[in-house]
Image (cartoon, rainbow, N blue to C red):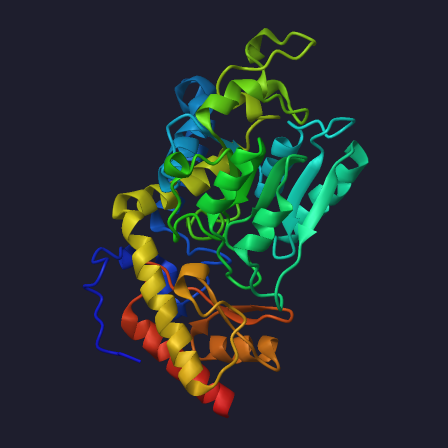
Amino acid sequence: MNHTMTDSATITDRRREEFPTLDDGIYLLSHSLGPVPRAARRSMRTYLDRWRSHTTENAWDSEWWTLQQTLGDEIGRTLAADAGCVSVQPNATIALYVAASCFDFSGGERSKVVTTALDFPSMGYIWDVQRRRGADVVVVPSDGDITIPTERILDAIDERTALVALAYVSYRSSNRLDAPAIIERAHAVGAKVLLDVYQAAGVCDIDAAEWNVDLMVGGSIKWLCGGPACGYLYVRRDLIATLEPSLTGWFAHARPFDFSFGPMSYDATIRRFSNGTTSIPALYSALPGVRLINEVGVAGFAAESCRRTQRIVEHALERGWKLHSPHDVASRGGTVMIESADAPALAARLAERKVFVDFRPSVGIRLSPHFYNTDDEIDEALLTVGELIDD
């Protein structure tokens, strides 16, 4: 493995001073929880100040009512999406259920939903209960719980398919799908595509406009450095006015402050996918991280992530470690899973050595370098992993 690569490749502005957590050690947990930005504390103080001064300056009128769209548009930038196409949600599960509630699976010829065995459990739970609404849910199996050949997914999509809903990058193996090919196939037979980009946004190439993807869901907790605050739902601009979610609420009404009692009159904008009152503190806590990501420039993140994860893969293969991730960089997201006989113990011992990773059952430890890491940190982390595995 070439250890002469320097940080001058791809990204030079790492903003390490913006993340106090990095003082604790080598942080490789972005797939799970991004480190807190310094600006998040200031942002939360702003929230409290707005609340305190509500009697002299109405907080809703001055900022709170529009803050949801401000955050939505910042998230949209990480997806290469048009402004006004991202609805902030309480979490990704609710975002997915809002999207699912737009479809009627009962009695029609299009009742099929194509998912995969590598999707996050919430997706599986939600599509399973859609069977009660008439959905014919097809779960495309994986190979060894690591990869799913694109052709296998394409073969599952036919004229009965209403929706193809799957994770662009899998949380279990970091398997990355060929999204453009799947979208092209689905559109050719009149189906729509929903991508779960939670494990991809902020670290992998995503181009909502170029891909012509219909829907995407994700959240703030991971690569966007927003903490466990918000989920989001992206809807392609030309579809916004055509979808009517049954999971709805007063924030989605065209005239919410009329306080009229039924029937529902959806707003014409992305706000039609909102539901109840927004969690304002969540918006304040998530916004600084996403803004920082956009300031640094998400365009360079994908290339550097590929270089970094390939560095980890090559080192692991040289040492004879078994991986639970694709070896091919084009089929892998921003995380590498290294199998271990006792992953919880290995993760705990790494933490004692100030190398912070996590683990999943039957997966091993998970390592995720982000833009704020240095090449020296990656090398040190791999050296430490090796010492503990050989111990």
